[in-house]
Image (cartoon, rainbow, N blue to C red):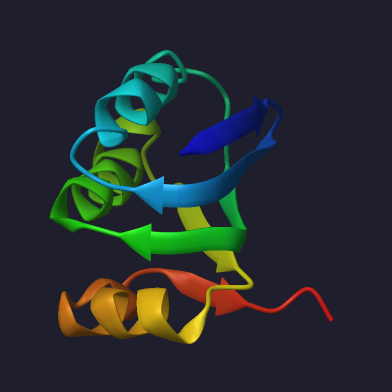
Length: 101
């Protein structure tokens, strides 16, 4: 999995490939560096994300719970397969989903 992070009040995380057990720790470490910064929203851009495992879901939950109090998580352009996993895991209850078009 490849990712890039553009920091700001709204921080953008672009994800590509598979967010799985082997790749999630690298993203978790990068997101941990954001803890305590003035971030109101993290936008995960998922147009090129093809797969997410439970380890990847744990990274999203970490972002929601640990980076900044009251922060919003937005996931943009989530494909059907990834959305199904997120929905089954209950993430759809506290994450905002959008499409870029």
